[in-house]
Length: 154
Image 1 (tube, rainbow, N blue to C red):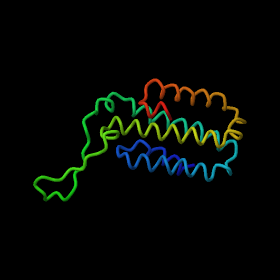
Image 2: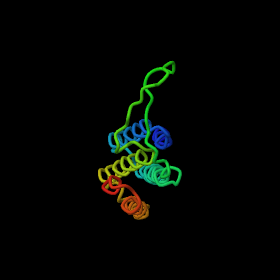
Image 3: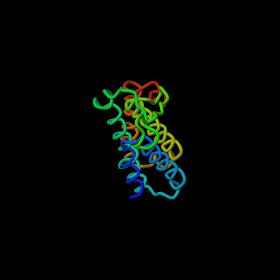
Image 4: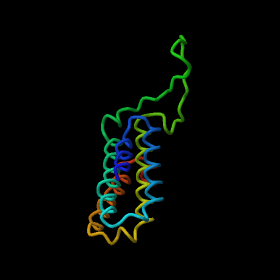
């Protein structure tokens, strides 16, 4: 579970590519190897990994510093020796930090939802299942109320 925790930590990296790669790797690994986990391990995965990922990502996505970062992003192309470096425009749907964090929130919510759905028979047997389910539903409600249209649809 140490590797999963490391992926969780980098799921809030400032670079969108790193965040999304970490989340995709985390959810793919859980889906591929979740069948061998026992109850105590699933308890840790749900309560110390999946729900905290949603806590972390939703917190970053809805923080005032992120929401205030609506300046369009541009990436510089070429070397530092150029007088006027060329700039690559980013698609309007992902061209601000806030929009990129909403995309990360959407990715995290979809991944957690899919993982919970795939392993629901095992997860429903946990003593902490009801509390975990209520926390997850609170995240879904928060996404519907406070997220972007894409997050709400996740």
